[in-house]
Amino acid sequence: MRVLVTGGSGFIGSHVIDKLGEAGHVARNFDIVESPHHAPGSVDTYLGDLADVAALTDALRDCDAVIHLAAVADVGQVVLDPVFNDTVNVRGTLNVLEAARAVGGVRVLYGSTIWVYHGLTGETVDETTPLTLPAHIYTASKLAGEMYCSSYAELFDVPYTILRFGIPYGPRARPAAVVPAFVRKALAGEPLTVAGAGEQCRRFVYVEDLADGIVAALDPAAVNDIFNLVGDVDTSILEIASVVREIVGDVDIVHTEARAGDFSGAEASGAKALAVLGWAPRTPFAEGVRRYIAWLKDAAGEARAPQLD
Ligand SMILES: NC(=O)c1ccc[n+]([C@@H]2O[C@H](COP(=O)([O-])OP(=O)(O)OC[C@H]3O[C@@H](n4cnc5c(N)ncnc54)[C@H](O)[C@@H]3O)[C@@H](O)[C@H]2O)c1
Image (tube, rainbow, N blue to C red; front, side, top):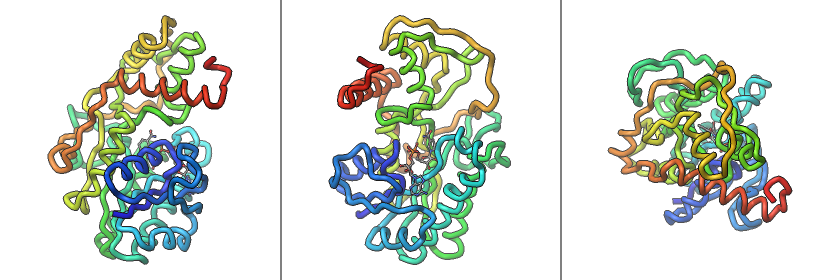
């Protein structure tokens, strides 16, 4: 298949580009910037903005599917500029659907998030769990994208697959995320700060596993359906700090006041992705963190970053 990846220069998208190639598909990147993770010229790239439906339509022209990942993905940035977030995450998704409608016969695989389950109680939640109105603007924008996918299928026969990602970590992660932040501090010999007792859990998923799951969702069995792509164990913030300390070296773990706005939803089940797509994550958390640190050191070596020398 020829597959357009919006946001293919980003953290998750760049791995999806790699995994598409490994699975024998032809990947095309649509992003506002060149991929910093691929050699120049090695990926078919359309530089363009999600705001530009004509550019999206042009990039989609001979594709079988689009994996739509371009977004404002940093929740901190979203809060700073909700209107810009809406332009990129909501209108941008609408534009991808419009382009798919114009081209015809293209499935839209939409990168959503388990944040849609935020605030739900109960042991586990799955794709059939009714959702409540979102408490965060980021979640509102991602849910709006889900709703547009379902409406475009209903009204215009644009097929979709909604993929709700767990919290990804691994090589190429943005520095603001929790694992990179802990690793950076540990490498600098600074104490690791944990909010409260550090018992809040996150369902992490190693990014290369996640990218495999996204590619697996190209299977026709996933048409017009929703899948959680999540890790299979919850990891507490304290456990993350402990793993990082074990790998990097002996630094202190310091407890601070609990923070508002941390993800605290019920556990999202990945059973459906296993049953229908045959996908489950494979990489244990400590191994994923080791690979992230190895990548960071390699990248720092290439850039001669002084903080890791
Ligand atoms: N990282 C996470 O924790 C996480 C969790 C769940 C879901 N997601 C979703 O996964 C997707 C990818 O996230 P990520 O972490 O790889 O983000 P990222 O910021 O690393 O990558 C996003 C990419 O989109 C591109 N982009 C942004 N605005 C654009 C525009 N207007 N036009 C074209 N390209 C544009 C950026 O240049 C970047 O390369 C997002 O949709 C995000 O909401 C991310």
